[in-house]
Amino acid sequence: MTPVLLVLNAGSSSLKFQVFASDDAAGPCRLFRGLFEGLGGSAHLIIRDGTGSVVAEARFDRGGAFGHEEALLHVSAWLGEQSGGFRLIAAGHRIVHGGTTYSEPVRVDTQVLEALERLVPLAPLHQPHNLEPIRILQRRLPDLPQIACFDTAFHAGQPEIARLFAVPHAMIERGVRRYGFHGLSYAYIASVLAEYDPALAAGRVIVAHLGSGASLCALNRGASVATTMGFSALDGLPMGTRCGSLDAGVVFYMLREMKLGPDEAERMLYTQSGLLGVSGISNDMRTLRSVAVTDPDARRAIDLFVYRIGRELGSLVAALGGIDALIFTAGIGENDAATRAEVLRGAAWAGFTLDEAANASGSPRVTRGSGPSAWVIPTDEELMIARGTRAVLAQHESSRPRPTLRATGDRHGSVENEAADRSRTRRRNLHVGR
Ligand code: ADP
Image 1 (cartoon, helix red, strand yellow):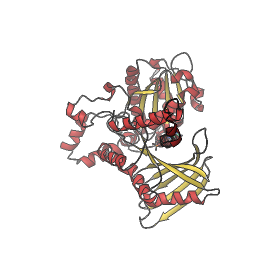
Image 2 (image 1 turned 60 degrees about the vertical axis):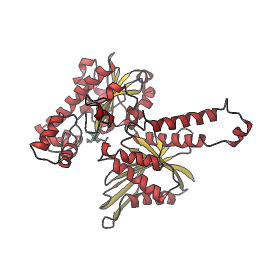
Image 3 (image 1 turned 180 degrees about the vertical axis):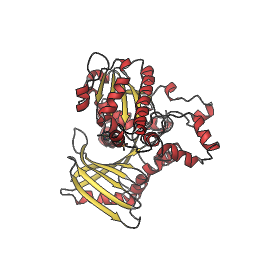
Image 4 (image 1 turned 30 degrees about the vertical axis):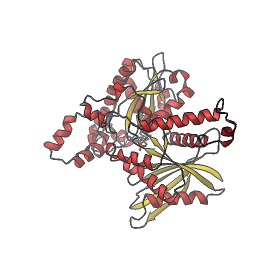
């Protein structure tokens, strides 16, 4: 039976999952991707194989009784039924917030789960949903190793100055600081830069993750040095339904003058703003592009999105002290040639020269000339989770006591023991915080 990893990304009524074979020395190999929607109501499941063909589709109407737990049990049973069979060896979870403690993937035990629950106030709209499948699997498959991979972790090494808000010290001590998100996407892009051009991996690169959520990240030699999202995933660029950076005074106005409660204000800024709020039409770039020629509200929403990308890009160029390359990724970045063209024309001041034909075809490099380059690189957050999950499993394997080595007293010169020591040190570091 093929050993497989289950990668999970849970929302309030959805569960995205991917299945990776984990028996290949070359790294995890994607077998299936699936999506449950409408959990807790009339649920729908679709599973595709590696080529994108639908291999399973089902509806579950049990008067709201088909939730995340039933979905996970269904996936686990479905895996066992496939010809040849799959042996589930671990689950890797996308967890939005690792706070200041977790700067690498970590195996979840009771203490780790409690620590992640304490972070719920930092991401109340996402963290509880991310943690739910962990609890379910602990209950239903208690021996299954579970690994948490964090959206914040990639930014943990940023310079302290990039992480600070100018607020009283007591607030900083409470954790009111910039964390940054989309870290799994940025980590993936950083990991493949050299395949596109070795100079990118060694240079000053800004990555534009433009999807339903959107942010920019400045990479110096592949490490995050600044990013547009901050304390929450609301900051920075306008997004599909989120407002992006907003004068904090607006929130006081909403509470005091508009008489909104905090939950209502939060809902407005998270779910009714951004492209949707400004256009009044849709949060979906494809829809907006299709009507922008005749609809001034759609046009204005797109223009604001592009303008804000340009402003934030300038800020990150300053943080990096220059720019060698801009990478577009995620749904809009990978697919919307018009947004890429508008951003690059607006950034001509930095030396970008758009290659219209390359951009229209989405070929990896979309600029020409001797200035900074721009590229389209598809992101793969799930593969990063699978890689992180495998790495933690391997650390745990290698840190198991090895009686034969101990018996000979040979503690030196053993690669395995050195790896185990490094792994133990790393795990200790994870728990003291950084
Ligand atoms: P998420 O994974 O966060 O839901 P995605 O990365 O899938 O988001 O990005 C969704 C966005 O990408 C939507 O605004 C959608 O309209 C846009 N998008 C996807 N495909 C295209 C396309 N072919 N042209 C323009 N925009 C696209």
